[in-house]
View 1 (tube, rainbow, N blue to C red):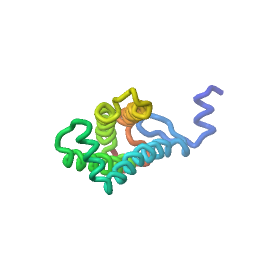
View 2: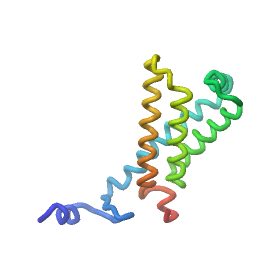
View 3: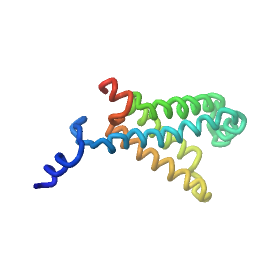
View 4: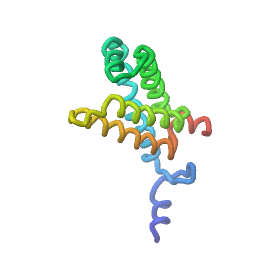
Length: 150
């Protein structure tokens, strides 16, 4: 019995998008999206009561139109974070969040003399990498995209 035969006879498998998944691993993309989307959602929600501090940080980074930046941050982090968790238009949402991670890393976390800033820079680039994996592989079986046949 070769490895392929053993896999199909000993595990409950289904085929989706040309890949074989068992009953447990089909939930892994959903859990991953919840973890990543949750970070954005919590970050955005924490900005809601902190208008003055957030706009001061945006201005301090040398960016114009801090109130507009505040609104964009809320829409991106809360809106796209929630859409990612739900798995709606996941590839486009993940791509938008990956760009957001890189942009915020460059503008807000590029002071490498401060170890904390370097850690945040690396965190943002790692999240961008994970989001690009979602762009490539899609939302997974447990998502609004899968339900809609996307």
